[in-house]
Length: 87
Image: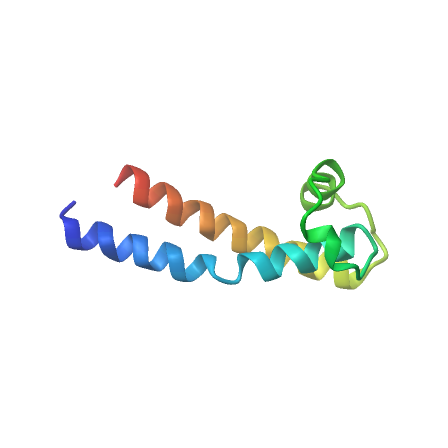
């Protein structure tokens, strides 16, 4: 792959990554049931991973909807990263 295509993939990867902080913050606030902004800096990963790949709140439709969206977003992010690294 030539340099311009690799630069284009890097540009798309960076643009796609801009809202990642906002989405992760929103997801963590739903998972940990808090509105405190400190949750963005705490390394509490296990419940977040259980919430991402499991169903910790089966009756919370906001959680389920946002979890599905966040999984989709992260999967596209991973595909962009892998295509940049291996193509």
